[in-house]
Length: 133
Image 1 (cartoon, rainbow, N blue to C red):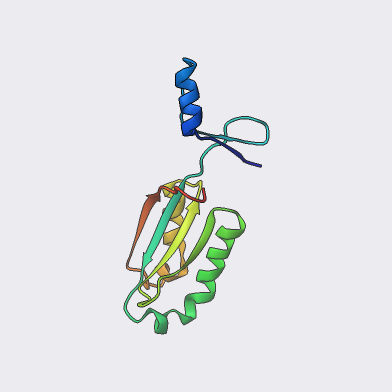
Image 2: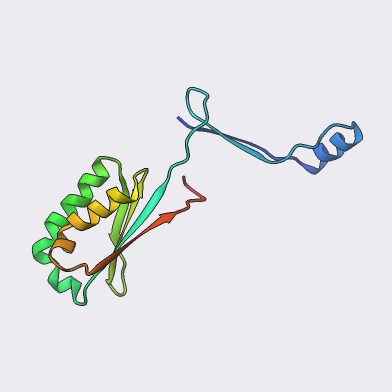
């Protein structure tokens, strides 16, 4: 379990601190785990598979294997979510959590769409999550 403690200095507290010679409090955010130690922040990588033209018509024979690979990653906790971009369907995006770039590269190059030539290129980028981490 993760506990978040936020201390925000209000105007009245700041005035009181100045009047009494104390130090005003600054905003502080402390993340702790159930054991009371500091919680490690998660790291995320975005994998974007760039599709060939006509992907909707071409993906059929490879879709089941593609989805099975994504499901395995979700089940083992390395993929948080994944799906295709719409209007147009020209790319698929995967959110990986707490893995290195080599893991994501291996996943991309073993993906059924990539192996079948339906993904001519892919990109891997770090993602700094500021809400929902």
